[in-house]
Image 1 (tube, rainbow, N blue to C red):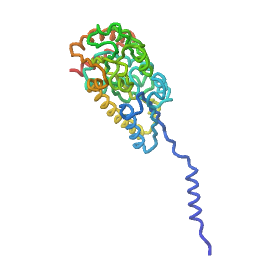
Image 2: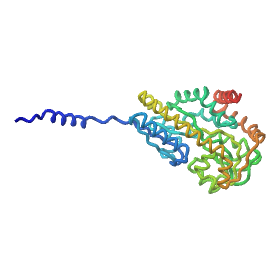
Image 3: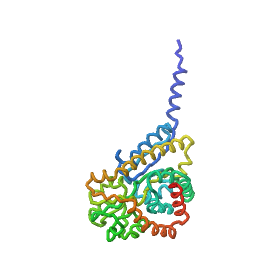
Image 4: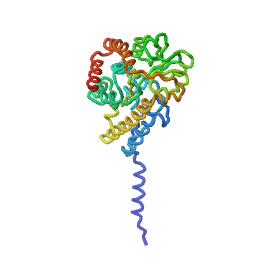
Length: 337
C-alpha cells in the first residue's frame, strides 16, 4: 500500500516559505521628553498613554520608545535631531525651541494670558494653527499640540517678592533665552542663563539667588530644597510643544498618522490636566514643601506687567518678529473679550 505524502510535503513547504519571508518592518518612534520617568510627572504619564494608544491602534506597525529625563540630549540637540530626522518625536519646552525656530521666543512675552482657559483659546485657535504651520514650513518640524509647562513664578532664597523693587539685586536664573534675560532685567534683577540640568546645583551653591518656573518643574527638580520664597504672580504661561519630524510623519500610512494624531490628543489632555491641577494648587503644594508663599493681588500683578511687558515687547519687535508678537497680543485680546 502506498502512503500519500503530498499534503504533508506541501505543508512542510508552506511552513518553510513562511519562515523564509521577512517580518514586516516595524517603524520606531523615538520619543524624548525632559521630566523624570515617573508616573507622577505629567509628561511621562502622557508619553505612556501615547505609547499604549499608538502601538495598539497601529496593530503593532509602530513601536514607541520613550526616553525621559533628557536622555536624548539637551533641547538644542533634540531640536536639531527633529529637524534632521534622527529624532522622530519629542516634547520640548518653550526655552528649547527658539534655537531652531526663533519665532517661539514670543511666548516669553509676560502677563499675556489671564488663566489656562484663555491660553488654550489662543493656542488651540487660529493663531496657534498659523504659528504651527509657519514652523513646519520653515523647519520641517510638525507642531502637533501645545501643552502646559506650568505658569511661571519667581522664587528666591533671600526675601519675599511683592513689587518689582524686591527684584533689585537678586541673581535670578533664567533659561538660556534672551527674552527671559530681558524680562528679569526689566524688573531690576540680575539674570543668569543656566541650563535646566544645572539649576539645582546652581541654587544649592548660591550661583543664583532665585529662578522662575512653574509648580511642576519646581517639584520635578526639587527646587524647593534650595528656595525659601515663592511669589505667585504668573508672569509667563509656559509651554511644551509636541513636535514630530514632518518627513517621518508624512511617510506613515493614513492609519498610522491617525493613530499618532489620536495619541497626541490623549497625551495633551493628560499633560494639561495634571499640570493645570498643580498650577491651581500652587499655594498649598509649595507651602507643604516648606516654602513661604506670597500671593500677588491683581493690582500688584498689573504693576509688574506695566514695567516688564513694554520692555520685552520692544525686544521682540526688534530681535524676533514684530509681526508675530503683534499677532499674539491681538489673539489674546480677542480671546479675552
